[in-house]
Length: 304
Image 1: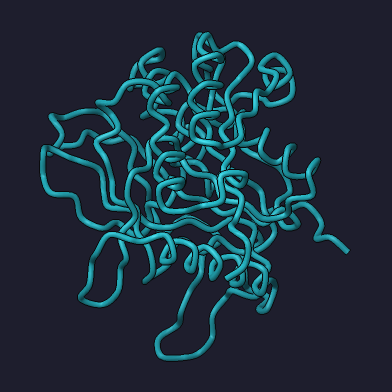
Image 2: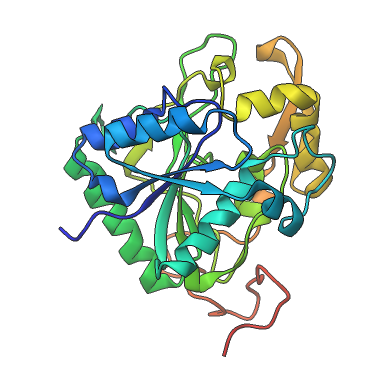
């Protein structure tokens, strides 16, 4: 086992309930590798300082006005002009400044991971999480992949039991800095646009087939976090941002099983790039530019 991977947690209006930090401390993660980020205009900085000190984790406060100036918005921002994209771009600045070239970003409301193997589900222990995280790092370094995510169970729709939805990977995201060109735009639906909106060298891989899966929580009913931001602009804004950004890959639809609420739908087959397996052949498109028909993720020139 190597040292624990740095975990960056964006948080907003949840100083007494930073579930992710509590979870990883309980699982035996190195507290100095757990970083909670809030913005300088937050009205509960003292409460965050107290909570993080009690857990022994790192608290970082980034300059909100600087973030507004540097990180542009797509569509209309929230009245507070806040977004998770600002925090995640700050993570990249922090990582560069501190010589961190690999890290994991996790939302602040994570409570459980499950071990997923053929025919097996059980709650993950600390070494389960540590082992999978380190495997992902090795995989990304070998294949020169900028972004990678763990799957999670699906949304809580109509009170139904959630099923595993492997393409849904936004909550636990790994970044390999040498292959990320630039960060996210400041949008109100950072979750969905994460893998289509961040420019990185290498191929969008989706998620692990086995290993860990995030146990989904009913986050739409929780207080604080992005829920507060979504409420500022109403859910209609959340449902329309990504169709405007990526009209060929995402469209708006009324969800029959969710009371007819307008939401977004992702057409996975139209997203590039992604890992492809062709039948029983060993060929895949993981390696960058292995085949001339591969679709590059950016029109910027590849680094020399």
